[in-house]
Image (cartoon, rainbow, N blue to C red; front, side, top):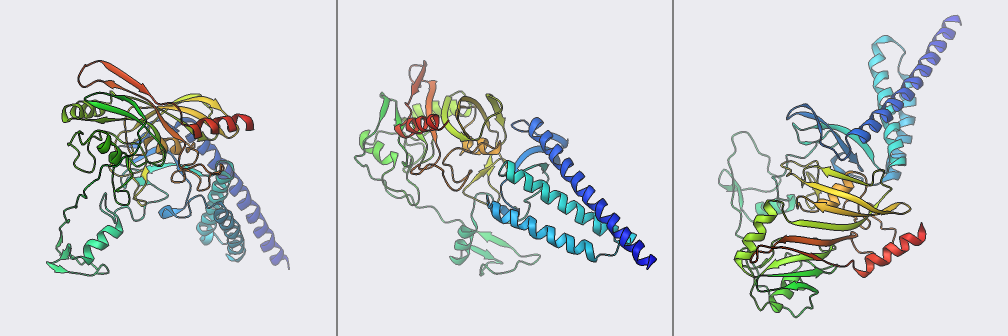
Length: 431
């Protein structure tokens, strides 16, 4: 009886110690994450081992492999199930020293799970700051990043295999074929067919036009140039009609005159070149980052600082090929300066100035610091709280550059679209 009482007392003591270590682990977890947010957010990574390991502020809205993005109920349910499992496990594992490692692992798992749960409740994402540059992807999502060649989707490669453009040992194979050591793989990419683009009588909001350039105010839901699924109704279709085909030919038949782009749901100023000399001049200015570009946007959340800079390279997302990411392989330099113009309840009207012009740059950068753009279902919440809002609330307000012919600085400004001003009025009334 005394022996049983002693065992029961030891088990109770171990339970109390385990609970104390879980609480201590959660406190340490939250403390280190607060340090990461205070000293790493929006700043250059802190290099521990060059080319291998660094501290970098990361926000994880999903699980491994990019699964369950923003699925908060799933993660809360997982924490509950994990708690039950660990309690059962702890109750069955003997309290002997040789099982100490297993019990310690259970405590660490629980501390991490509760720490992440607190993050999801308070921030809607989990803060991480360990970044292994050796594999060039954050520690919480390393799988499958080397499976796909850069720039090609899995479905595209499967299509190439089925059409015999990919051969192993000079023979066609099925997509399910397992490679063995010594196999020779040959890939022949089919030459892309450029469709004939028609001129279409579509009205343009022209901010400025001369013999070299035309600056337009692009509306929402308008694609800049033809691409699969959008061969009609694009800005290029309208420009071909308006300019009677007199556009720079440097970018080929599908992108005549296009020297830079903005997304389909981004509105605002865009310059198009009418001849190759103008195109070359503006392309050089873009490469040198000397073109002045200011955007206005509405972002989620309350900003602690009224201004700041996000300096984080951007590249193709390792697993979701239609997205860009600050945790990508072969990422390119990207710098965004932001200023808060007005704070609302849960939202902010901001101005962003670009030093570089990467795809989705403002959307990716603002999401990376916990302030995704309102309406951006790709990098922010899937559901938009404002009915009828189409895509991200982002407007290319100001565009300035050296005119290719006169050599003088020229600057153009596109007024905020009606939907944007109405949204600002609504947010002010809600404050």
